[in-house]
Amino acid sequence: MTPSAEAFGRLDLYTVLHSLPHGVTLANTEGRIVFSNAAADKILGMSAAVEASPEDWADHYGVFLPDGQTPFPTEEYPLVRAVQGERTEDVEMLVRNPQHPAGALIAVSGQPLRDEGGELIGAAVVFRDITELRRAQRLKDELAAFIVHDLKNPLTAIIGTVDILVMEHDEDAELVEDLDTVRLAARRLNRMILNLLDTHVAEDGALEPNLADIDLADLLSDVRAAALGSVGGRQGEQRILLTAPEGRIVRVDRELIFRTLMNLVDNCLKYGPDDGRIWIDAEVTAAGGTRITVRDEGPGVPERLRERIFDKYTRVERVEGYRSKDSRGLGLRFCRVVADAHGGRIWVEDVEPTGARFFLELPPND
Image 1 (cartoon, rainbow, N blue to C red):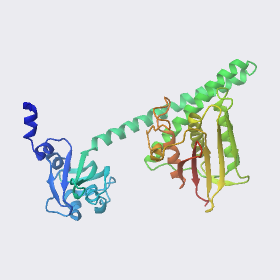
Image 2 (cartoon, rainbow, N blue to C red; image 1 turned 45 degrees about the horizontal axis):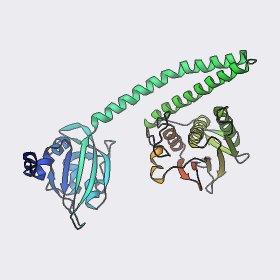
Image 3 (cartoon, one colour; image 1 turned 45 degrees about the vertical axis):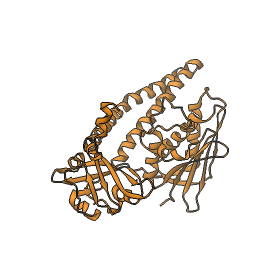
Image 4 (cartoon, rainbow, N blue to C red; image 1 turned 180 degrees about the vertical axis):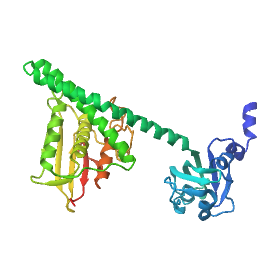
């Protein structure tokens, strides 16, 4: 045995845990704290509540939901859930006490502890202070929103100038084709900018759809026309098929729903084969709402990833080992933001034998 190995052999578990920068707390099967390392006491601003039951933790530490107002439910504590055999990861909690009068936001992960025979003997939680991280993220998002907002005016000028040039040189087919490429790219960039701004507004709780009665078939027809335009000559074999009930009126924000459906179609174009088809369908639900589906012939979305693809900045690819260079993980997040703002929902399922089907369900008209 080398001297280094001998030195490690003389270390006990508690010495190691006290040296960690993250907080570590251990509890027995009754939920009573039996150990808390130095980092835990510093992060929480209080010494361990070794004599307290889980029901007393809120008073001892001052624990709230991230809103800083609602007391954290005892049964939802990661340590309580871990004692019951459940594993948790990065549960966010706010701690406010004399050492943290402004509140400290922490992320807590819990893990059941079992003996060699698999018997539950207690639980452990590991946590870290993410207050500064969240503050930096908010500042970054605000800065991004300002920058994106300032991009709107020059981009609008580009689109307007291109429109004028197309009208003035409509006899030059080659030039018009090149200008159309610029115009389509500028319009797509404009949609991305608006999506990012609306996502930011929604996260502040301020996105209010401008609702109006819209003919669903007309809306979907416009989506199809715009999608065909974006395909252009690069994917001439791509066919976009549309089925919608005639005379169906939906009360929605037309611009938000249009951009949502364009995002879904863009996603299908990205992953579908060059000669594949995309279906845009709509139907009335049994509850009187409206369900719009966008389906492709691509590889589908693995079941374990079907929720994550709607998270902000999550770039989850359908094909293992493939990552789209122009994806920033915002398009599908925007789709969920719009669905939520309309009181609806959005999800994805696989199609047999191949493909993915995205569902956008809107509630009945008021």
